[in-house]
Length: 429
Ligand SMILES: *[C@@H]1O[C@H](CO)[C@@H](O)[C@H](O)[C@H]1NC(C)=O
Ligand SMILES: *[C@@H]1O[C@H](CO)[C@@H](O)[C@H](O)[C@H]1NC(C)=O
Image (cartoon, rainbow, N blue to C red):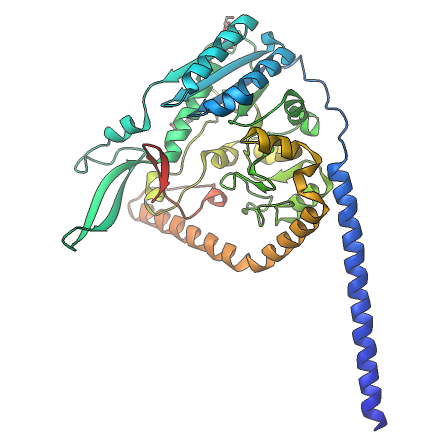
């Protein structure tokens, strides 16, 4: 049967050609990933010197951080302020409610900063989470800002279903208040007579170094609304998913390199260049200070409205600040992939070394994982966002019926969670 065999052999040929083409694409792809690996792990050029002509306001908040303070943070801060020049910096530390050695560690740091002649505020606030919780407004009183009524059901010993209502303190407005307090010294002096700060540098409880901060400050030659590091607790997985949003204002598609679904963000990450994003925090972040100085309430930290939180919607104060920042649109928010910090000394050492991608296998596997995650997770991400958007819309409609105009510009920051403070930390409810 000549026709059938002709068909058979032409089909084989087409299949073979397709297979060859596919193999070729795979080969080119793999070669380009190897180049990427080489680029991202070769020793970087030495960081630029730290600027000594800029005024930098360094802020941090602390809770039970003694381990990292003693092992790394305090010494790193002292080195940083020495290199920046004690006359060019202000250090603002706000600690609250720690029950480990944090307060002592910060007292020691305060004394060292004094020796260097660094202007500073170190606040050790004794109010613990437990005390905040004990001060919960009663259920009959009108709603208090930052508090939510939560309902839990449990089965009593007699087998009865019991509903327990209580007022709980929202974690995010609480953190936003602490961050605002860490910024208070910005306004201690009359800014018409005292030079303003050029940059605000926020340091989490991470393993930063002076050269990393130097790299971060010089991101895009200093042209940014904000620039962030990448943070790791268990490398190669990055840590702070709550604050990081790609250039399409979507959560990352993968916890490992190259993280981002949005093309603009992912391509920059693969090139090892500053990554345009809509929000980041991730360990260390530097802001252009000007929006924080606006007369009568400049930029600051906030949570979403309590009415939204009641609908089981939450967003990080570290994401919303970029939404509220008028400079974000013009100067951009960037992740600098060369600036990688850890929440422990080990994690920090690993991600600063060429092992941060977990070897060639880690990189190639990660790239494929992100590709699959982008496709496979697409529907879930879409439905998650739809759920949250639906709640925001319902909240707005409810306001309309009451004649209120309700707004939330940071919908991209929001997730389907409710977070409240607990004695030993915080919890999802
Ligand atoms: C305010 O001015 C005093 C005196 O010049 C200075 O020591 C202090 O550091 C200034 N504070 C800030 C936040 O700039
Ligand atoms: C923090 O400060 C900003 C700016 O003053 C303000 O808009 C915001 O409401 C404050 N946040 C909280 C939680 O009080």
